Amino acid sequence: MSEIRFTGTVDHLAVKTEDLTKSVEEYKRLGFTVETIFEDWAMMRDPKGFGIALLPPESKHPPHIGMKVETFEELEAAAAKEGRPIKPHRDGTSSFYTKGIDGNIVELIYYPEE
Image (tube, rainbow, N blue to C red):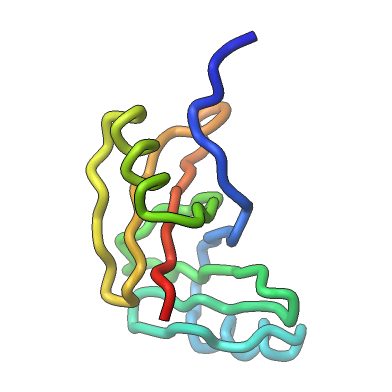
């Protein structure tokens, strides 16, 4: 059996959208609320906390699976193991992207306690 690369809980899926404003409204109709919105991405959350990140054409973020870790130390250890730099984000989170299974991108993300 191979060594586990890192652990985390699936937090969100990041998907492309052609019209951010329209997509935000459609996800609201499905019961999602806006957690964060910028001109180049939005994070929507369902009532149980699962997220959909919406990525319009001008977004710098790639489509990905977001996995949440509980501590910054876990994020640091995983980033070191993957050989990836940690990047702080304007919403207060920190993360890194890495290749997942079959080349799908995985983001490992840490949400600081408020």
